[in-house]
Each structure stands twice: as C-alpha cells, then as structure tokens.
Image (cartoon, rainbow, N blue to C red):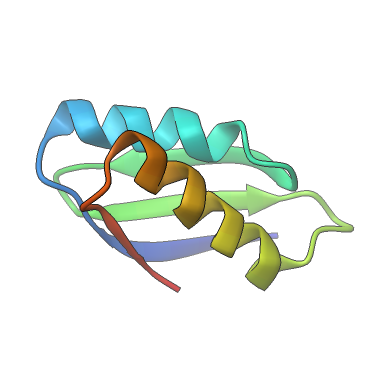
Length: 72
C-alpha cells in the first residue's frame, strides 16, 4: 500500500535526509520525499501497521532534521 503525506521541511538537503531516514524504518518498502511539493510518498510492506510505522518514520526523521513535520 502507498500513501502520500504532507510534510514540512526547510531545504532540499533536509528532504533527502528525511527520505533516507524513512527508507531505513521497519515496515517501509520505499519512500520518496519531494521538497518542491512538500510531500512524502511511503510504500508499506503488506503486513505493516501503517500508523505505527509512520510514528517511527517521524521519530527517525526528527533525528536528522529536528524541526521537520509529517502530517499523519
């Protein structure tokens, strides 16, 4: 399953860091962050709990860019 989330990130480099952090999160099959549209598209593994995975994605993203936001 794929879902798109509105994000808030300050620069393109930060968006790349968020994308890498999201990709490393358990339950995430793939992730793409678009700085220009301020959106993150996440594809989950079939057995993943989307809400729990996204909380973990946000936590991991805040480790690399503490003032970023993902509107879950």
